[in-house]
Length: 375
Image (tube, rainbow, N blue to C red):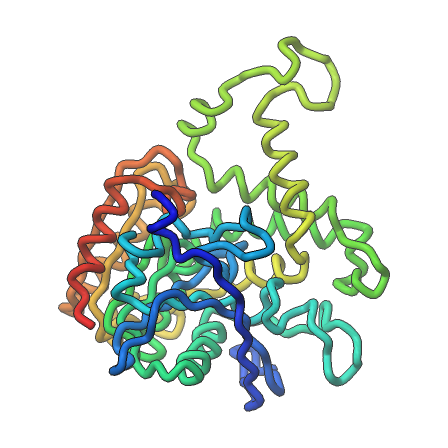
């Protein structure tokens, strides 16, 4: 889309919260700070606010670009802006870097007021439930009592679902995309392999690597490579790389032979250059722990009985990490409770990453749903 459909230059904002936050683990943060961005204008009745929740490696930078870095475009810029599916002429859109993140919100890289050093491994584990509790304080700060919608993909979709359960009267629409009501054993296994890559890196130093002036780059690189494989579909890998050779012939070495190897190494190196290892560990654990039915003997329908919102649930045909069957579990549990729910299963060859792409069918469905949200 042309620049007229962009939110343009944006700037991050900060909100400081001084009241203690009790976490699901039993730990307590004495106070915390959240970094966020907003797009559009909050209306007079404060009824047009939409919260965008990010996935594992996402941030508050959802749309637009920075004045001093025009190439740094928001991760969901194709979705958010004037005349885009999440239209900023209608909605006041909020993106937030979650608690424990590494983009400015209080997390392992922050200074621990008790020690005067970075938290590192001393930063407590936070969960999806904790993120939503912190986001509710941000909503209060912004004067938003009820979100018109909360939307997210993958781990962001889990947050949208949790909003409907933890604060059922503060959300009118929950948009849960490429997500699941809990991780499968296979998904937990992938997360554990990624964590072990980081934990076994000699530069990890028990999580206090910042004190040693190093970064567990090798572990982070391997963790991202493992994760990235699960975000792509076999079809997409075959179409994009196949068995193409990097140098046109076999080198008979353990260096890069195939283009897919080169791609994974590039993605791993890039990720290790900007993401925090402790944040990665914490966020994968938040994924593992999320399970609304845990306190309901595994009965998802009973767990979702608290929800009052209307739902948009979407999955993608080639997403094998959060397969369509997992989204249908959410749909069936909602229908059991006679909740209003729209479900879309979208034919897209890009695997789990489909929710980030500019797929015409997908965006048309989002646009149609969002246009029918009254503000």
